[in-house]
Length: 130
Image (spheres, rainbow, N blue to C red):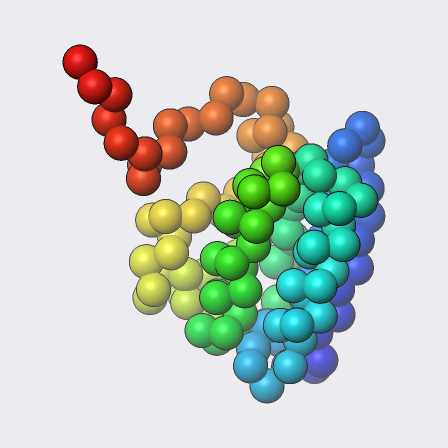
C-alpha cells in the first residue's frame, strides 16, 4: 500500500499527521514528507504529533525520516511526538534501539498531555558547570 499522509488539527495549537501504508524507500515519499513537514512548521510552528498507527511497514529510510524531523521541528520552534508504533514499526524501533532514544506515546491523547508537562532535560546537553 502506498503511503498516505493526512493532517488534522487539535485546538488550540496541535497538528496531528496521520501516516498510513508503508514508510519505506520503495514508497519514494521521503521528499514529500520532508516538504510537508517544512510547510507545516511554517504554518504551525508549534506542536506536531506523528500518528504511526496506520504504518504497516517501515525501513531504515522511514526511520531516518522520523529521526530527521525531530531537529527540524526543534529549530523551527516546535516540538514533535510520535504515537502508536506497533507491529513491524515497533520491531524496527526496538531493533535499532530508537525506542530507547525516542519516546513513543500509546495514544494521541497521551502525546497531547505530554506537551503540557515540563520538558525533560536533553540527554545530549552538557552538564552544568560548578
